Image 1: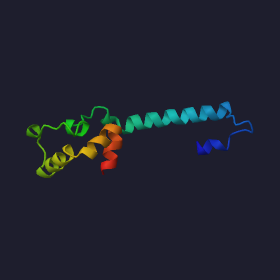
Image 2 (image 1 turned 60 degrees about the vertical axis):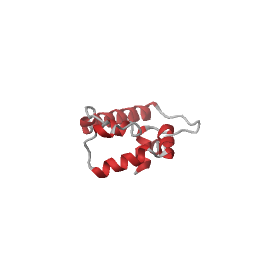
Image 3 (image 1 turned 30 degrees about the vertical axis):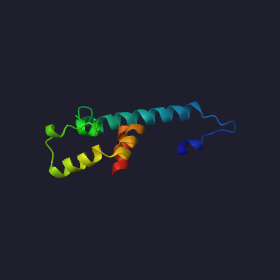
Image 4 (image 1 turned 135 degrees about the horizontal axis):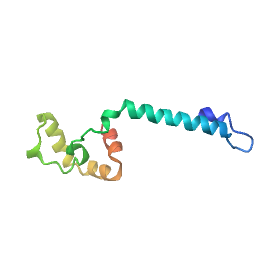
Amino acid sequence: MKHFSTSLTEDHSISDNDIEIFTNHRGNLQDYFRLRFKYLENMTIPERIITPFDVKFENLSVEPECEYELAKLSVTIAAKAVFESRSLSDFWYSAT
């Protein structure tokens, strides 16, 4: 909204024209992101990513290093507490 802050009047209102410009820009961004990231709509997220603390190791087909890291993660009580207190994306972002 930094761009639109210059359009505020003394009574802190925004003109209808600025709202229309913002709404159109937002719509264009939505269309762009929908097109740009279309492949994500049908992407299958592996269960080990969604529930890293309930991984069935006998069903995995991953590299040994990855299996080792998942095993360490699955027994880390502190990591599980963080996982349960954050969104899935926030958890994985903080893990990197």
